[in-house]
Image (cartoon, rainbow, N blue to C red):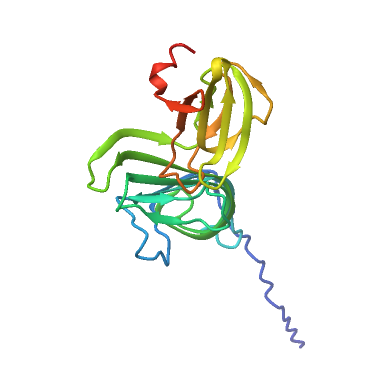
Length: 267
């Protein structure tokens, strides 16, 4: 009698992982951020006022991890802006200096409020977590960094006051507003001076002269002929005599300053 015994190893077939359907997953392409802005290490001598805010808008591309769809990396680009409000302070972003000076002007004529706005082009990168990535619901969290470059910086002032805080003029002036020639003539000066900053002086007929001072930039050069209403400069706050963004306009006749309202209608 013969006894035959067969032995066979058990072969385990690996089970394929179920494919996760992420078609309904929220990719959070459009990102809007609102926040509070404050400079770290700001000295007490710089007077801020009100709520300084940041507004950022980004378009993001989200890439989930294959091993864990709850985690993802997002890359994008967008525009960011900060708006910081100062009180009775001259913000010298247009001064012809290598350093930006913030000058307290509470003991002289000043603007009650000055807003410094900066705009950046940025590229953010985020590491994201989603508690329920299949349908985009539940808790979400993200941490990230961003790099960028400054596109623009300007100030806006309101309520020009004297040292007793009595309003002299109640108006809003933004830097880089267009400055036009009040009458036709030829330019005898278009350059920078320490006191009056970027300035333009125009000679007109009958010995009239007009001056446009404290500009952020001049768009003409010496000897140019201009017509009435032609763009010649952009308003600003350059020069040591400036108290904030504005246009200092003068009219002279026969070498003496006169009231502009007396002759502008004639021009």
